Length: 260
Image (cartoon, rainbow, N blue to C red; front, side, top):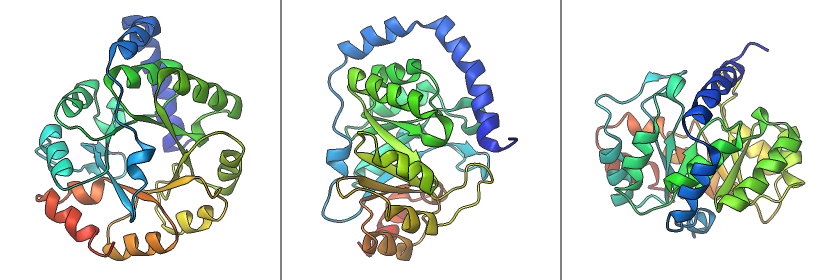
């Protein structure tokens, strides 16, 4: 299957071999256990309205370079000052120009929960996220065998980090119903074609459990989008590209959230 996700995962396997040679998982476990507890993720997203997870990323396969100049600390501080509930940081180096350095800089500059957004294929990454002070980590259902996913949820529990399970279709949502996970991210972007439709959220939300915290991801760029998502019972949204294209991040956030 020659698509963007499969190419990213193929390269990620090579990255993991290098990363584990440089640092053992045992070292990451030790570092994670020495860190102070990270702020809660799901708890901070349960608001009276729609919570906002604002994303930091330099580029993407679909959009190319999104923000130039790119200053992750400035972006993070602007997000927090504007009252976002959490901040997501892209970690993938090859396709999104993310880095551990960016995550560390952001973690040291803000207090709100942070999501380690990566294509996770190895427990090493979960412990890496915990060692950096992440509150939550993205787990993509389309990238993981159900048995592997179940084992990763156990690692998240051991590492003290909250999993955000990302789904893209009805089969993945059905799987999410059968496992013990609180946060479900519905990605409106097809990871095979990178096409985007908010209808994905509206359709898949119907298959969620009442106690699931539902986050709509990708393609949210208009106050009317947010209003419709609120009416559909969505708890939070994850927005990056739309905000990052605006010079004034605070103004962009205020405009996007004005109806909720």
